[in-house]
Amino acid sequence: MKDIVKTDLELCVGCKRCEGECPVIMANIIYQDEEGNTKVKVDHTVCIACGRCISVCRPKARYFDTIE
Image (cartoon, rainbow, N blue to C red; front, side, top):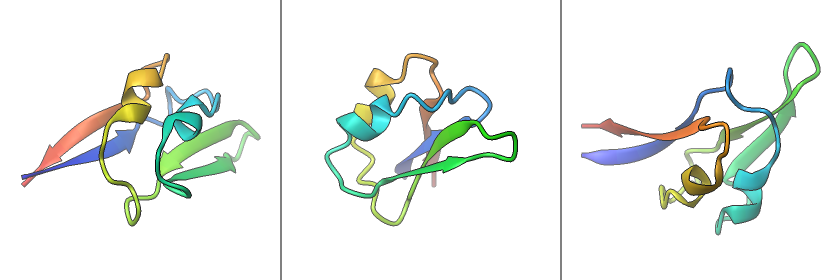
């Protein structure tokens, strides 16, 4: 079983606290959605699933999704 960090982009406000807390360079992808809102999603190819971004996400947009 592996924990994967996911982002609920509906809840993400683009504050980038997750990026600032992340120990892995380039594990967060910052972009603008079609309405021009800043969003941050996880790059699963480099994310180490440490959960530090989850602990600082005030709108609770980041969470663990457990997969088998």
